[in-house]
Image (cartoon, rainbow, N blue to C red; front, side, top):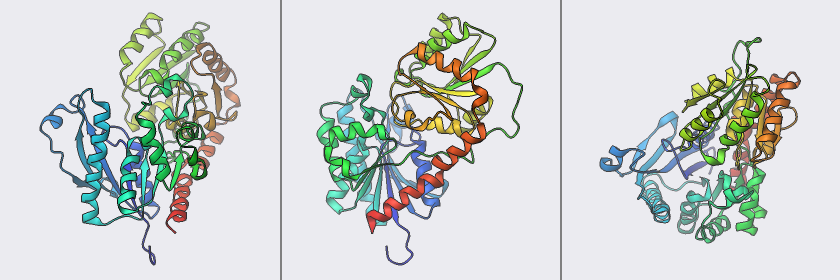
Length: 396
């Protein structure tokens, strides 16, 4: 890195658009905007249900693209039904080959940024062994909270030796919340000396309060946006809301955004509880639609059983909303008494009580303060500067 040559960073995400991982793209764009030379190498794991035509007839050859000004070097990796371990190792092998092709064309970077050890970490460890390139892992997976059987059940016996090796080889490990360090240190005790917390970020210019606030809107609206799956706890939220709305059905509404395998089950549950007049499901929300829903809501709720961080919480806070979340990992490190409330996981009675308390004390929450706090701690500028300092320390 002689003279003014920018630090070159190859980003290896463990999942990537269009199969999730939009945050990883935003993070890479923010690094590039801060002066880094950023390239993304992505294996796009694709099942036949994800994109049948592409799966059957699409090419798995590497291709280059430059969305939003960063170069992405990607290839489709076909997922074999009912072969989880085989699929994981095939994905690693394909992305290692992708790196070899990339390096022949563009050379090696100064540093590799991995998003999640499972399984981008294996790719980075292979590159480190063969070419000596240092790598940073940012761990995002909520299972590393190790806070209950639901989280721990996502690990398999064959995961542990692979992850131990990855963490040992990493030049540095970043966890998006301190709660994730429990699982990382359990797997690799030696990781303690090279692990720090850097939170996730949000675009606080995009996520902002509505230009004109509706001061008289009623009823009070709670919003929950997350994948509709068991670990996100929407079934607990519906039970809590049922308790809450029975006291005054006209005073409160709940909007649930997102899609996922539990969608039909949750809708049936809402019908069974006779909440159809007070609970609505939006389905999948685009980024713009999410902002619109946040601007219309009065407060945000995230009832997860375990959670690495909770990016949607800081998106809500950037719009000035007070938030309620379970003490499921990362949310407990985000929420303070000035911006919301935390409750016990998997407890609908406790959640209903917190929702009632927030409604009653709503005037105590300063929306401008909540937004400014979010800008100071979770804006692109605040978070990316911490990565730049980390890279400089490792590459110098």
